[in-house]
Image (cartoon, rainbow, N blue to C red):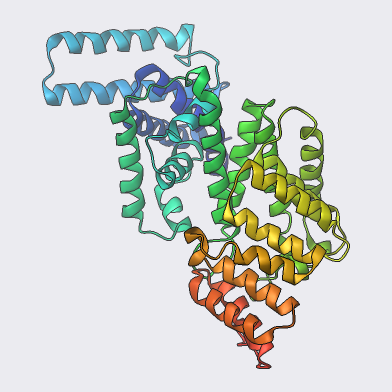
Length: 424
């Protein structure tokens, strides 16, 4: 007998495929999504009473198709469309009726999830809209869940998702794979969106909680899905390995009171060893195969950390080399900032601070708390307590994450010889 939780699981597993099948057939994102939701509601009502069908996907597509046709009929009646259009809809209904016995899904067996992911990450959309639409259409999160994760009102998130679907419609995008020349860049956009979702979950940009576990778990789930659909794509494997290796640290990353514990101070016996080992195996198997991309290099850095018993025994020279490689692949001040920390561990804090000075005029970092937090750390390593305090205080003022703010304030207080606030 199907339970509500089973229905929820089916939404997560089958909804992208059902939605993709309807968009492929009818082309209307909004109406298709409404029809899929109505089909799932019907499943939640009927399956506990009558038992789950032998082919849940076919059942959902068949019911959703009927809902779509009913809605289009209603719209056309309301708008008083011409008789020829009504006749066309009748023919669609007859086709769907035949599909009930000859082809219950009304579509091929092709999994449309990858095409749906690419559509949600259409270049006509802004990154926040891509993230929201991906979580809604592919991830199956409700608008309320997405709004809570990003700390915005539900109405705001609903408008963002609605505008994203309208923008896709206005762009003339079709539900089909992009031309071969565009596929690599479009897939990179998908991976970037999944990376954004993971990062927001791993270090929330605002609020009292450091982690938003529902986002990290969803990002990992969707990236696993992408790897199933693109098993030979090294960057998909690299991103999945990076997520697993990074998320493996989460159990040791906060104290019981929710306070932040940085990597150097974490109890590595609390790391999720199964996730870390899977990530190491994945990146080790992936690196020798073909060109190396940024996500693979980041995963390799995370793997070096995962294989070390402590900060002191970490192979920092190898990490410096990997960061230099990453800078060549994706010149980015945040990468250079991370390299500065690794260089300081190899050659001393003065060398790391020299790298920071070269970044001070980069507008992308000027008001970012990470620049000042890293400077505070390196100044502390160099024995400049006053300078470190100044940098930590500035970093605390700039961050919007309360756990990070409390950690930075506690560092400054400790260097001043004060007792940190109990909340720190």
